Image 1 (cartoon, rainbow, N blue to C red):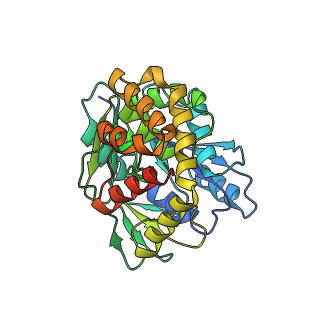
Image 2 (image 1 turned 60 degrees about the vertical axis):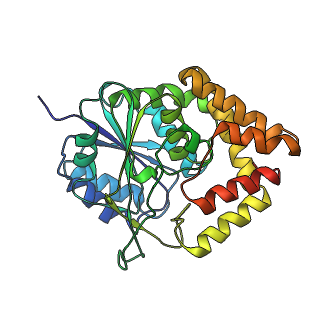
Amino acid sequence: MSAPHVAILMAVRNGARHLPAQLDSIAGQEHTNWTLIVSDDGSRDGSSEIISGFAQRGHRVICLDGPQQGAGANFLSLVRRMQGHVPATSWLAFADQDDVWLPDRLSRGITALEGIAGPALYCSRTWITDERLEHRRISLPRPRALGFRNALVQNVAAGNTILLNPAGSRLASAAAPEAGRVIMHDWWIYQLMSGAGAQLMHDDRPSLLYRQHASNEIGANDGAGAKLSRLGQLLAGHYRQWNGVNVVALSASAHRLTPENRALLSGFAAVRRAPFWRRPGALWRLGLYRQSRASTAALWLAAMLGRL
């Protein structure tokens, strides 16, 4: 049997400084049957020339113009447009422009999901590094099971590590035109896949070097400063805004969710509208959770303050 084909989706904007290292790491993958689909959000730093040079070295590359509405919208646009550019049986991976993949980034995920007929998602931990790819530290563990009750309130599937099998890829491609706006493409993917009953696998071994620098759109959320920043965003109402956008996007694809998870989505939307005195009992009945006790406590605080 031939090796499965992987569509690698990369959103690019002014990434020339780090693109060569990432492209070299993709070229160095143990799994060699892939096509790189790049959506450039109006780069002015030579990114397009670097990608063209990569293609001229014999690599399979498709270049598209991005919507210029941010990284999340750019990635989602790639999911919407990938069909027609790659085989319908393609697996689906996402690549950030500034990471460096370990050689088994694709092959390990394919091995993990091989033989699963229905939708399935693989993701992993990462090595968080500085801009020079030095001072490695491993990303946070995921001690609790991945699932829709977690996905509704927390994104733990790092987009740069996600791999979807063909059924998962087709599900994402079919749902993407329904979604409208999303906060982060990887959070939407995690919610959609878990909501639809996909098999979810989180690998405790890192699959790439996650480069941190001043231009990161999201960045790692593992330090005390980052956690305080997220708490500040919660108190300022950003978390509630994000959840509102997520509920709208998921509701548009509610027919793709399992009956149980459609009910959970409806219940979550209801808790967000409920008066103060009804929120604790309603939240308890839903059984929503985050990965750590402190993070779950923040979830309850958000609910009590009307910031859910």
